[in-house]
Image 1 (cartoon, one colour):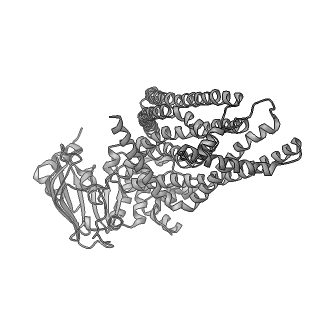
Image 2: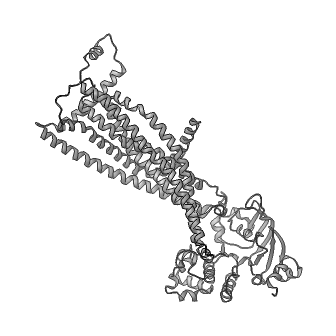
Length: 640
């Protein structure tokens, strides 16, 4: 089972890197500069460690320590023709040559007549090394930050673009806070993982490699002794990473719950205050933040447990080396001198920070994988409403709209529309009425392809709407919904929403036709007045008239109208109804009627109940039939 888990993690990590590298390819130049600078930074940092031993020997020269004994017997043994040179001897010889060459470079630079002059030379060398080290650190950090933030921007843009392509049922099944959390919280977590995985990984890996090579050059036997503890370290890292990923997923879900409660409470603030439910919302929010706090605390405990334990293990290794090699040097039986041993100790302890950072990379990547899974879940979500390969644009509506045996359900258990067929001719006003929950809104939502029917076909001028490009299909239509949705922007921008190169006079003419110009002029800033979040600064009638002005400015050939005058006062209703009449004039109209008095003059009225068309005809015919329409009309206009 552990082997299977490790394999699974490796596959997920591979997928995570593969998909992220596809984005990174666009920034290969910046990555190349950053990687090259990181390499140079690691080299200069290593040089600082390498000169530590010679510097200490210069400052604190020790005269009474016995020198390392020359292994003459071994030398004679090696040189003897009766004995072959072993691999250990070859490795030692190569390491000795490299060590002596590097030491000679330092000695040549700092060589002087006395120790004080050598100290001055050491000082200049340190300044030069530190200068170059930090210059390359800055270059590496800047370019990696550029790449990192660019990747995050791409992920956010891709998520938002994906949301625009997904059908409405995707959003109906999920809380708004969870949807927002993908772009905000999850991307931030992924950002941290990219920072660790693609920034510190380069620097710390190179730094660890340089320092480790120093350890090998100085004494490969001591290096092997130091590595005894590594299996324990990596086993502990794997365990922590596995646990951390579990709690990371849980904490991200809890953060999504916090976003959901916050978004819903702010959006429905009027309802909250109307029902005096401030304390109820407080309890909900406090519960959500408490749950998030608990999950985050568990994750923090595990994350911060890794660092001190790794530190203790690394220090234990260092103490073992110090005791083992230090005694040999003091007794004069060591294979390296005191200066080389000091360099070895400096290099080994200098490795603690980058190695510790590398051990945390696994932990952070586990958090990143959890976030990446949620992000890629959105990116990979099935786009049910898409253009087919052979779809083509349609710029004009000429003849008719036809529904042919259309059936639809949001889930398999509940049928919303069942075998619905009817035709709307060009220039007709067709109203759809019926009891609540009968499928009226769903019926009209299928025409702009907000949803996809399970069976049947909808055609415009004989062309299946699935064969028409989405943007051109929806450009034929203007939609005025029952719930008027405005953006937190100016009145002018809300009327001209999505339209470019629209002059102010055109906006004003649309507003006049929608009976909106007069109330707009009463605002201090007129058309530049802000409407507030979801149009909260305006009344219901004013919002509705702005929505009508928006539809008028678009000048659609087909109008889908969810009539919403029932919640307005008498004066607002009259003004809105006049604007509606102007909007309907000369257009093909599909209207969902809530007030039956507003659709008396419709060319045809379709009565739908339980997903089926039960009646169809004009107002007078339906009244005389004595069916469902007659009952609905009587209920609405019966005398109290």
